[in-house]
Image (cartoon, rainbow, N blue to C red; front, side, top):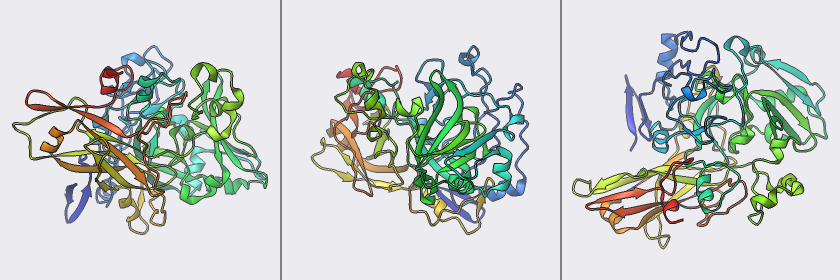
Length: 496
């Protein structure tokens, strides 16, 4: 059951339980020199009331943050961050995920504070005063190339706001690294987050530029300069022109200008695909006849055949360039969030049933249609209840706007967001089981596999998620497969 939030005569269902539905004016991500001062104007009372009366979930309010001690001696010494985020690659660059249960407890939308971050290098510096004058180009195989400022993007183009779940292709990679070390660092099961993004459909910009008949791909390049050039990648042109795909040039996240870690002042958002395609700090949109030749497009975000070892991969340039191995759409995945890792359930005081719950997501716009739970290693399965908060936005009234963008998405059949599942299980049944395992299925009948498909980059890991049940002196203790980064714990390390 969801929590009912009553505002006058207006009743809203939220699920899972979330903090009060308030919309803050977070200045947590400022990149100006005077970071401690919040100069953001308050939301007008009538606008704030309108937001509170929405029939769909609004973001949790971000809490104030500051530059952390770990970042003071790095190129990111201007960027405010939340200390709860778990660092996966040491101090720098900043690659983090939130604690899994804290992510789940925030509900459908993730605050700016806890949204996962994948940075390949230093965060490009752009002050608040410079943001609106930031430019990016739309060029390549087009009849009318142009350069546009963020100010013109906001003032001259139709704006839209809708929720999108971003997922790193490395989500759950730690499990693969325990089995056999990949070339990637160890994400846990919280390498995903959901936010409300505001911006302009990329198709509108491409139609202004008029792609030529030879055009097949759209390349994106960011301002983050790295050892092998600027970060860049590409997707197919017809995806960009398809409104059902929802690809956006975004300048707001949860109603606020983008935080530096999330692409300030402008970025690409590609729903249903791995986060690595959603280029941050956007500088170029280039229409081409071939996929991107950017180093990071070729040597990252691939699932090579499992026979290719890390050592052998160094000398296989043609294999890396093979587009058959490039990852675009996400695969079906899910995780158990409760019981959390190392949670104990005292049998003497336990309720009759325990609500096992977690998340699931699909890729390419496909909806999750089934989540199944087994307590006997897959001999039999039980259907979990699924809730889709994204559907609340489809039911927004005609003409509804949020953060300056239309929420018009009633016509869109594609699913861009995670969903939540739950099942109440008798505690006696949990006590009789060795483990709890789950699997999800999408509307294309693609189901999570039982076994892992190991690959050299450790990406797209999605086998059944297993939590072990231990019987410890009058209590049940639950053990997740791994813990992120170098954190110890998890049954996979124990049985390695």
